[in-house]
Amino acid sequence: MKKNQFVIIGMGRFGSSLGKELIELGYEVLGIDMDEEIVNEMSHALTHTVAADSTDEEALRSLGVRNFDCGVVAIGDDIQASILTAILLKDLGVKQVVAKAMSELHGRVLEKIGVDRVIYPERDMGVRVAHQLVSPNLLDYIELSKDYTIAELAVPKCLDGMSLQELNPRAKFGCSIVAINKSNGVIIAPTAADTLQEKDIMVVIGTNHQIDAFEGSVTAKSR
Image 1: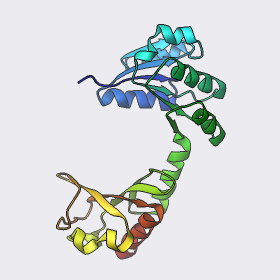
Image 2 (image 1 turned 180 degrees about the horizontal axis):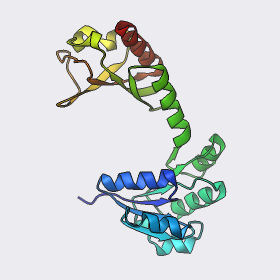
Image 3 (image 1 turned 180 degrees about the vertical axis):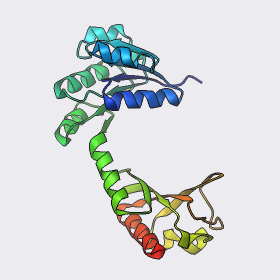
Image 4 (image 1 turned 45 degrees about the vertical axis):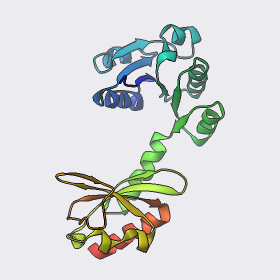
């Protein structure tokens, strides 16, 4: 089965990090940037790299970007270039266009022109780090929507040996434990009989309020 191919436009910190991670995951990545020095630096890390102006329709067409499954606009310092590039990727028929936004207004414009997914890396990372700083058992936090969140919580010593039936977060708080990451592997869709061990990681899904209440209860028990 053919793996998806990605084109990333803008090889700054976000674009280059994204490209390297996709390569690690086994995907093919074309990196495009106007800066030849950056392109040369990234040439060993990605499948292909090209120095080109992404606001030039003919340049993008000649590179065959329409054949890529996903185009990521990771331009970080030129809002006009970001918007024009996203428009061209849509016009050229790239199946999925993802773009990095530097502000809420920039993001709204990207949504208006039909970008499939808008990413706010700085804002989202700030939200995640804030939650990690104030919640000692919280390892990661991803907002799925305005209301729903998925969180990773470390199991404290006070919950060691407790079954999910005893903990019963769904009945008590309304949230669900959808996986338990143990030292010897991950349990997906755990049953009520599965038990927790200290330092396991619970993957919990629910509304922001439900997860806050559950995390608060876990923190209180561990004091």
